[in-house]
Length: 111
Image (cartoon, rainbow, N blue to C red):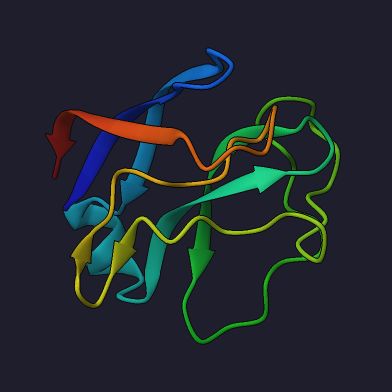
């Protein structure tokens, strides 16, 4: 099960919609270790929802959903939205201005 989120920075107004976090039941049934995580992709300096496989190396050739260039995971930090202590929707660094004013709003859930 996953969340569909929107993001907005209170400091500079950056916004991004339709961000997926998690996995569908079908994806979990096929690969019980896959999930979508939110990264700040360095090629576009934007948020991107990337499907990764837990316990596996990050893929070297995963295309950015915005520009199609391979994602550089060394330069593209993952945002810790879903943590062991719960979902943290506020206080993330903005990909545009860097302020810790990026917040997420839940738009819906997917299964």
